[in-house]
Image (cartoon, rainbow, N blue to C red; front, side, top):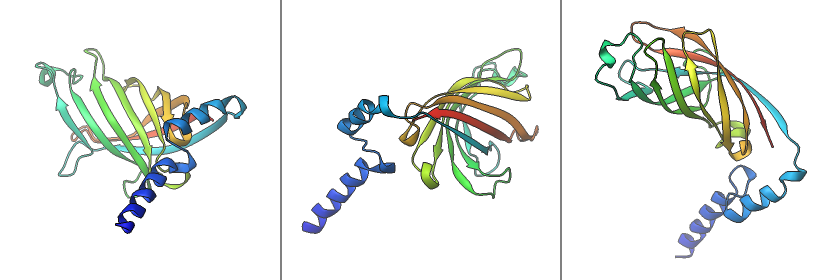
Length: 188
C-alpha cells in the first residue's frame, strides 16, 4: 500500500511539474501574476512535416467528404485528420522532433485551398511536451503560405507568431507531401 501511495504521489508531482511549470490552477495563476515581470522571447524553428495519405501506414486519414468531392478538381469538401511526423530534415528517416496533429479541409471550388487547425506537438529536448497551435488558411498552390500561430502550451504559453510553409515535395499520384516550415514566435 505504501508503494502504491508513493507512486500516486510521484505521478501527481510529475503532472504538476511538467517542463518545470506548475500546471495546477494555482500554478497557472501564479505564472500569470508574474507575467508583467517576464521578458518576451523570440524563438525560431525550421523543420519538415510529412503528410502521408497513401500506403499501409498513412499519417493523415480522410474522415469526411462532400457528395461532390470526387467530381471536384480542388478536392472541395475533403476533410482529413493528421498525425504527421515533424523531422529536422526532409528525409522521413531524419530525427523526429514532434508531431503535427490536427485537421484540415479543402475549402475552395477555385483553387487548392485549405482550412487548417492543428498543433505542433514537440517531443524532444527542452520543448518536449510543449505545443504551438496553428489556425489558418493555406493556399497550397502558392510557393510560400503564411499560417498564424494563435497560441501554445508549456514553454510556449501565450505564444503568437507565424509559420511560413512551403511544399518541399509532392507526389501527384499518391498525394503525399512534405511541407517545409519556418516558424517565428514570440513567447514568455
